[in-house]
Length: 153
Image (spheres, rainbow, N blue to C red):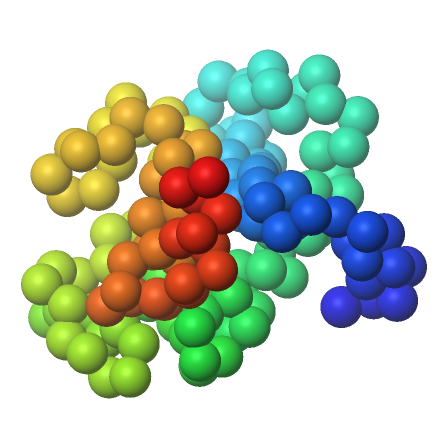
C-alpha cells in the first residue's frame, strides 16, 4: 500500500475501512463495464458524478489482488475471479476457497456486474454493495472474522 494511502487509512475505524474496501471493489467492477463506449453499454451515472471515482477504481484494482483481505493472508478476489480467464476460473469445475476448501460452485464472472439485476448463481443478492461483503464474510471463501464482526455491527 502506498505510504500516503496507509497514512490516511490509519485513523479510520475498522468498519469505515471495510466499507472503503467494499466500495472500492464495487468501483473497480463497475468501472470495467463502462470503460469502453464501443461495447454499447450505457454509461454509469454514479461514476460520472463522483469526483473520487478514479481514485476508488485504482484502490479497487489493488484490493482485488490483495491477499491480506482473507483470514490467513492467502486468498484474494483475483484468485477465483482470474482476469486472464474472464474474471472467473476456467480451469476447474468449482472454485477453491480458504485453506484449499472446495466450494460448491465455480466463481461467476464479474464482468459487467453493474448491469446485472441479480447477483450470484442463485440471484440471492440484488445490490453490489451487499454482494461485495459475501466472499469476505463466507467461512469457506475468504473467512475474514474481523469483517464479520464489523458487518454485524
